Length: 399
Image (cartoon, rainbow, N blue to C red):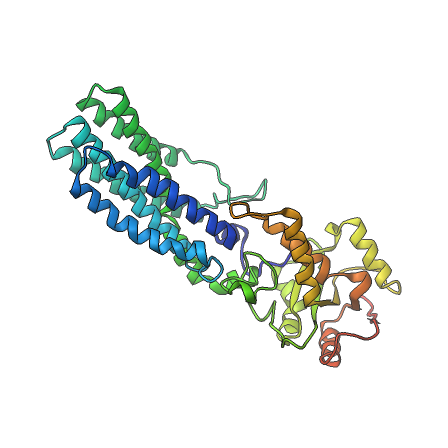
């Protein structure tokens, strides 16, 4: 897996992309189920209120038209997906507020404007509190679990619980004061509960602007991020950086990968000194940093068999060639094996496994083993025209 250059773990997890297919699925479910069925449909029911209907249908229609972009062309519009989800969270929470007002004023028969004003205050307080809590979560590191090293997970803070439960209880109490109908009280409480969920999705606005500010770091991690589907080397959730995945001319068949083997105690500066000058040549398409003790046994054996003249140690560098078409073919085979559908996303790790197997085939396509970055640069200049040819091994004594 590629080194997430200059991204600390909590930031990487905050920036993590789910992929265009997941974006399509989430946009469709959010729009059809949460906004249209749960939000807009009650506004159409009797007793009908033209004022509430038009207040909700106009922003809902805009969101449905906007959402078509992420259903029809999720690859092309991957970059703006978080902006869309953030705005959709705001609009859906607002529509739920209108539904609650309809329950209060048309079904229950409330006449005082106090409940509308107080409900609007609760709505704004919920959105503001979710924004503050999202900010606190991120800078407090709660989106990253250092023990489990899980992605996109966090422990629910008592403050989040208090914020969500407080909104629900406030709506519950307010409705119980004006009606004896248990059914209406439950419906309002359910809408309040769903409002907490959609209000949290509104925090994706912060994530969108954070992604814009850190777009280069994001592209260093996700090689195909933001590219149209036909320009991607495999179906993934990544972005493109010429330093890591430089597009070659169509007539060129091969590209090169670089494996950087280091010890666990190597810091970012030491690792950067090993491969940064090599990547600056734009001759390497895939760069992978591997902690040698973590290289599982079969791959370690392949590496030793590929370069039997050497004892594999750290720090060291290995150059391999790989076929671009071969990578595409293996990716398609993996996708067919999964039999994915419109609402079923192939895990991103599956693409990384295929990519690693094809681009870092040490035994069959290893070209160079060395401990000197300058030797890789000289070698790539020699191999610039063609990836075929004999394997080279270069030996340097450790200082």
